[in-house]
Amino acid sequence: MSDFTTADWIDEQLSDHVATARALEALLPTVREVAARMIRSYEEGGILYTFGNGGSAADAQHFSGELIGHYKHDRRPLPAVTLTTDATVMTCIANDYSFDDAFSRQIQALAKPADVVVAFTTSGKSPNVVKGLAAARANGATTVLFAGGDGGPAKEHADYSLLVPSTTTPRIQELHTFMLHVISETLDEWALATEAAGSVR
Image 1 (cartoon, rainbow, N blue to C red):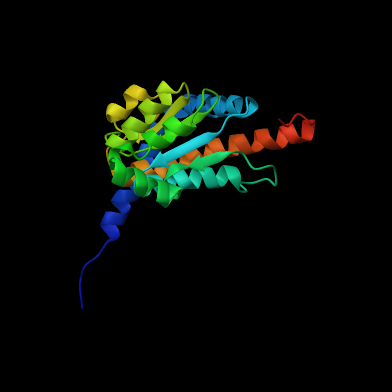
Image 2: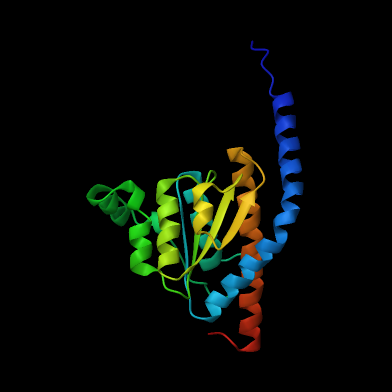
C-alpha cells in the first residue's frame, strides 16, 4: 500500500490561492471599468467577442455562455461570440494561413468599433492571441486582456488589462473565473434593470 500523501500539497495550493485572491483586490477598480465599458458597448448595439487557447478557450466560452445564457436572472440574452467554437473556420484559417492567424482573421472580418474583444491567456505570449488583439485594435474595437504576471506582449494591444498577480497557471485561471463571474453578474443586473425600466435596446 502506498504511503503517498497529498495533504501538504493541498494545503499549499489553498494558501497560494487565498493569497493571490487577496492581492487581486487592487485590480477591482479595473474590473468595474471593464464591466462599465461592456455595458456601453451593449447600449451601442455592440457584440462581445472572446477567444483563447486550451483552458483559456474554455474560459472564453464560459464567459460567452454566462452572457447568452442564464447567470442569475431570467433576462434577454446578451450578444457574445467565442471564436474557438467554429471548428471549420478555425481549421480553415490554420490550414490556409497559420494557426497564429486563427483569431485575427475572424476579428478582421467581424469586429466593429462598438464591439468589445476579450482575450484570455495565462502568459500573454500566445501569438494568435496577440495578433487577435492587434486586429481588434486596428478595427477600432475595445480590447480587454485576461492574463497573468506582466501580461506579456498581448498587453501592448489591450485597452484594459486584468492581470492576475501570479505566474502560476492554476492560480491565474481560477481568478480569471472569479473576474468573469463578477463582470457577468454586473451585466446580468444591468440587463434586468433596463428591461424593468423599459429601456431595452
